[in-house]
Length: 185
Image (tube, rainbow, N blue to C red; front, side, top):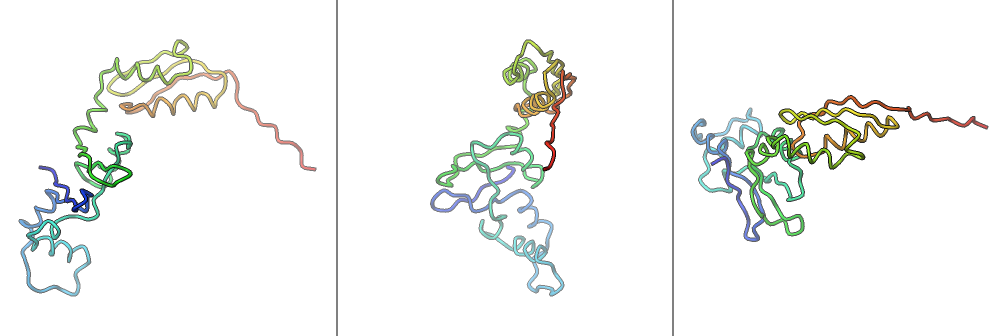
């Protein structure tokens, strides 16, 4: 068990009881007096350690995602918040529809190279004009475009493909964009 989502009567997540929340019960001694020198965080940890109900133990509010959240954004959220799973909520009702686990997110980044290569080809303006190599999620793109802005857009499109860990590119440009600033009158 990584964590359990606590929901209200309308099936909306209100908090999460994690392994870390439960570990507080083992690591903190329950005290009957509170020091005035404790921080807010320390006081909350002591309250959790003494708690027996989900409402007392849980971390609130629940950090959640919607079905439209990309795997990359979910992974970033898990990493920054140090959590292993996220409740998935319906964006309209706020009700829980499932749970996204770290292993689900990581599976996206271990896609077969042939599958990843096909998805990368699908975002290229002219797939035949580019050479694509994929190794452990790192995509190497080589080819030529007319303008530098097209090269930048191409790399960003490849980087946005689910499962792409990084992009290496050798994309030559026929012309730089030259902006002529009209003289001030």
